[in-house]
Image 1: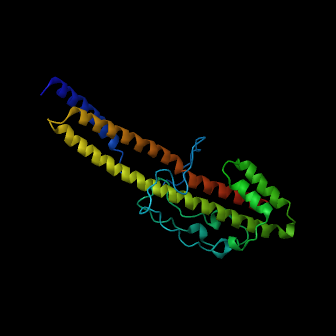
Image 2: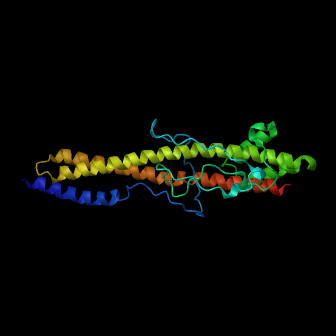
Image 3: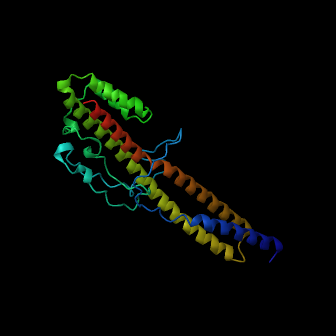
Length: 264
């Protein structure tokens, strides 16, 4: 064996040792609950994937269909006690997966109507578009809701508030459903990438143990494995931010529901 080949295998062994440490994190992320965790702000310029993130697998890994909506408000007095949905194998977030925000979580006023039955005025639609957008500062959104209801004659205020909250809640749940479906597809892609990386590492180890391995081929395999590991880790870092979005929507829904109640 030449000195050049011996040096190549030695440097390859050192690189492999580093990759073993990286690949130790490739097991599927636990879907354990982390109730009460304070979500981080989404970095400026970060694009939230939804309904389908970039590079998401198509076809077989679609998220499960949403469950039928429960009765709202006073029609379902134990809405707040709704148990969390069962864990899914493609849900990659440490936050527990909750399919939708219920009326009981954000509203204790009059029973909410079916949002499909509400004839939303142009004014209400514009307000919902404005306050539901996360780019609108929350204090500004809360004040806009209170001003809208304060300008309503008192005999009509409760009905208008209930209609407003029902339509707003439906908007938030539709948005969350799209984002959560995108997160599950993203998680499925990460699982596939992790499985591929494990196979690549195994094949590379076999090549490295071969005393007749071509040094050029071995180096190409090493570089490909390092690159694919980098891509996986960058996607995993992005996922930590995306996983915060459903919680941020829940918090915004709660704050705006409370603002509407305070205006009654």
